[in-house]
Length: 274
Ligand code: KIV
Ligand code: NA
Image (cartoon, rainbow, N blue to C red; front, side, top):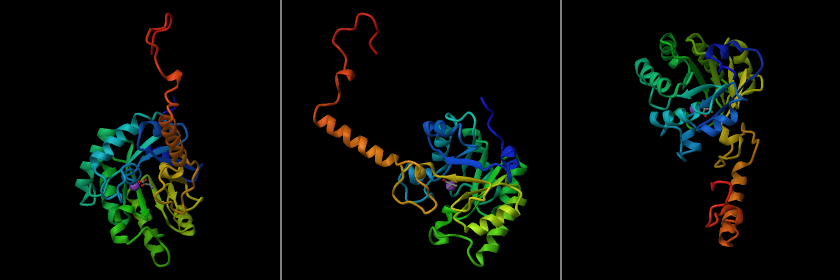
């Protein structure tokens, strides 16, 4: 059994072999990716892909903790990072510390992730100095969807300098890695070259130090919409719909259960009935 990497190990991978990561929300999903991912993120995307919520803003601390505990039970080799949900850290460093400590204590996550650039730097610094490793997240930050005005590409034109300053500020504050979401490729490459912590791209660039995707997106389980940056590696949603239709037909035709699925009235002589 390989030991799970620490945030310091992830940070040390800067400029090396690409870091592999996906989101996970349940034990079986975590087991599926444990041997293949350097870290797994319990993302607040859980609200949209598993709970049918319209955005990530409705996600609560209690939801994050339940899913974090489920994911932790499925991981042995990969590090676990957990998202701080909307409203649990923005008020200030003290609020952020209290909630980050609770997330780590109750889920045994190795690190937390929070959204925001320069304005979050003091909070990141506060957490890191008190023992909480922080992954930053800039570019498209879905918890700010109502002020951003939509899920559009971030950091084009004059915005590019601001995004570069955001990345620099969270790095100086002590973040061990940073997610770049939906930013132009050239800017993602410049940020990756500029800062000394790994950049984790989602809709960014193959030149980032690592990549992340929402697992339900890449497996084709979440099909309400597909972002341009999503590559579908499977079509499990369609496979599931077909399976359910086949089951419904079998039940209606009395083809299920078959002889192999039912129990005899007398216990078999040799093997115990299961
Ligand atoms: O919640 C999430 O899934 C995320 C990733 C997209 C980075 O924050
Ligand atoms: Na998130």
